[in-house]
Length: 419
Ligand code: ATP
Ligand code: MG
Image (cartoon, rainbow, N blue to C red; front, side, top):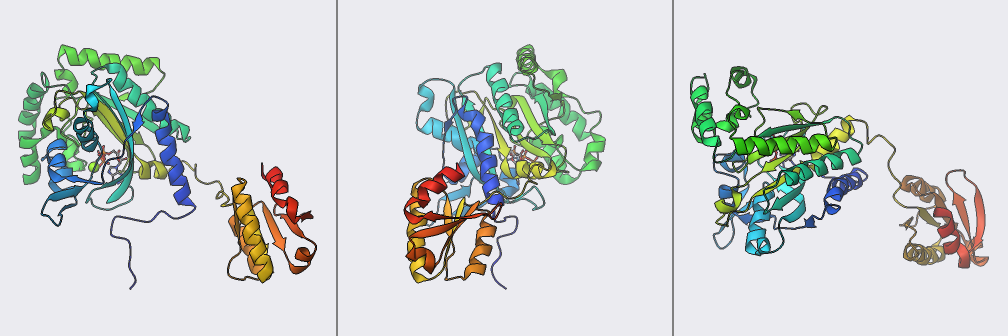
């Protein structure tokens, strides 16, 4: 058997691959418009960065990382998420010594060894944003708005914003203890009981119905927020409301990563079944210190590009016929015509008209089939008689009308027609 892409991965092929690039661009566009700068970090990092920055007790670190030794014996890990890398880069390059907040966005591949299923892959794409160095509810609200705007710009209507606060180091310990006490009284398997001791908030995120059924009476973090966290959260809520962004308070919303504090949110889509989260994020005020940095509060999100694409499919937003590959398609008949067409196509491209031509010495029928498949609006048919007359047949592929144009003028004529 020939090679297959590894389990949990797939290839993006044309024309869908063009659409996914457009989705990525659309999710990033609102960030550019709000002063976020593009950052590109390595696809692999020191394993310890994620062990500390994401947290040993998370699913990501405990079972989902692609970790390998390099030839010098260093332990490296393919990045499973972007935040730890961005904070590492900001600290390494001392960006936090300048204007605060440092606003960054990124876009790229992430890797997690997960149970592969629809919407859950081992290699997937995220667009992410981070704002570091300010503890300001307006920054939390700004990021949420920018995420919502990205989804809306794609035409998505079925995205819901879930919002919660996780408290901070003043109020979370007491809540954590109360939650632990509640969870210890439940009927849970050994792994989950262990999680109760290490990271009890994560148990609230357990997707299994038998666990969810027992969580009905669990204490809620909203009832344990200190005055400062409560005021902060109220301000985020009122800024969102004033901006006209709809949100649902979800007192059970927690995030998979250890470093979140206060504001936490998720964008979910109604048409995706159990892989419903199209994005999520929140505030992570302790992360910098966990990476040996100074106190540097932060807030950010990551949107799942693959799931956003699935959400668009679910809303029928990808149904319009495939976009055309090129505007003009050359159909040369014979050796000399091929040479001449090669030059014309090159000139067209230089003039800003996208163009392709039939390769491989195809006859008229085969070449015209290529023209149709390319989605071009015009075919240029060049035969021996045309060459002798220094002319070319320009065929409008929409209405089949054909006109003869002097070769010396064809680039200008087509420029006029396609614009
Ligand atoms: P989930 O609860 O679905 O596992 P998560 O909490 O692990 O999501 P984050 O780490 O917050 O997700 O990542 C942000 C977004 O990235 C998610 O909302 C989702 O859209 C996307 N995402 C996460 N894991 C995957 C994956 N394995 N395949 C495809 N997209 C993913
Ligand atoms: Mg996950």
